[in-house]
Image (cartoon, rainbow, N blue to C red; front, top):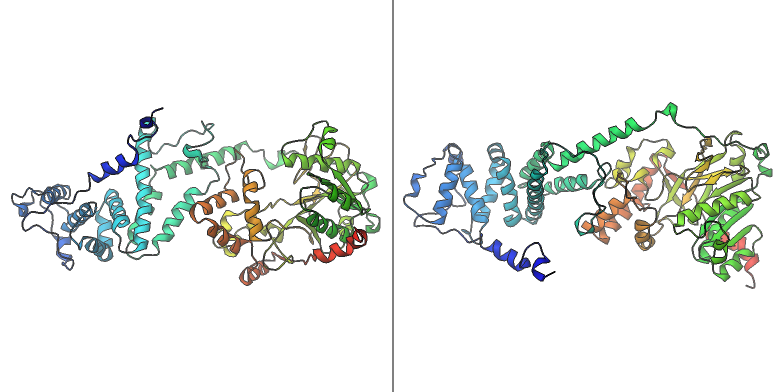
Length: 582
């Protein structure tokens, strides 16, 4: 492919800029021709109507006179103030203009915004805001004007192309499989039923308009016209979203027809004496030894009978140290281990997690087994065995609602999602003013929680947040106040940043290809694109850091859990006798 054909515009940006410059030569003024002075009385211009013949021009052939005449014809019978506004916009699109032109333009909008908006059509309002982008008197005017200019310019381009689709401007497309995974420049497609790009973009522009009293009426008028118009991509996408949600609601089985799949509870597992209950944990772990020791120490200190640890990337020292404790069952998941499994080693780490959890379930000597990760810690108010003893005899599992660890107070403070505290989701917007409406439960990690499962059921299989029996999710699961799963998901900002790439591409933030809902990954993408790391810091400070204000709001809603982990102390107490001399 030749260099000439590699670009949409032959000659590249040199040619683009050159062509643009040819349309920006300043107007020539004939003798006696001039714009009104900066201090001109504007009131008479509101009452004088324009004569399309423009007799005051005489025989002038200047480019200013030609533009004056064109605008006089356009504003025939309209107020001369509108004609003056058009002249100011036309001059300001050129390279040079009378020195007071920009100031006079700004004065019109500062003093006569209501009149201008009442008499100018949307096309002229867009021209006005574009002029603010180039010649605003403040940074706020220029920044907002440029943003709106790009928005309306792109709308004109894509709406023009759409005219050739054969669909009317107010007619949304039918919901069909997308023709491609990515857009131009490898951008992911907008998630129609759950995406927040439109809300974030329009809401941000509205807020930016509040910063400047002169451009605010114009900018907010245009944005209001935009969302009221039924012939825009915004309306079409909202219509597609509503239709899709209605379709899904119609396809969903009614509550009465949803399949119930209770798993049987063996009599041998219906133990109500806490002293007889043996409970344990199972985890597939890829982490440094010190983190694994802290995790194991916490649960052994709580009374775990067995801590099953499967090492995803085993190293001999870690295997040796963990094997010293009699209540730790350590399995090195190296090549030999996976070669012995009928499926071999699965590429997806989640699949490996549920595989080893199910294997531990079928071989453990515990009555109860919790499938949790190395950054998750049981937070029972009573002894864990006491909680398990109170589970109803017909329930196969105890649900562990998550409590996300907060930065700023060591390992002592956690927060709950509203539903875990019996609060409505609407409290999130008050607790997290900027980001609450975009986060499930106010969390950046999972809100599903994990399960403590009775053992002894043949054919039961673990998931990440569920258990399955006879090919369907098990439903006889009990909730109980006073026991949470503390999740040290991002206890420091540096750790949050270090794990971000993996979590966005392969971990818990990843969106599946067919997922439409607005997710945390969309928030991250927006912040990185618009604010960079500073935006992520602002987010982390509001959502993940226990400031006095956040502590107050969480406390008022019963969503603050104070539970000092004291992991170093527990590690020394639990492993000290076994590590002496090592």
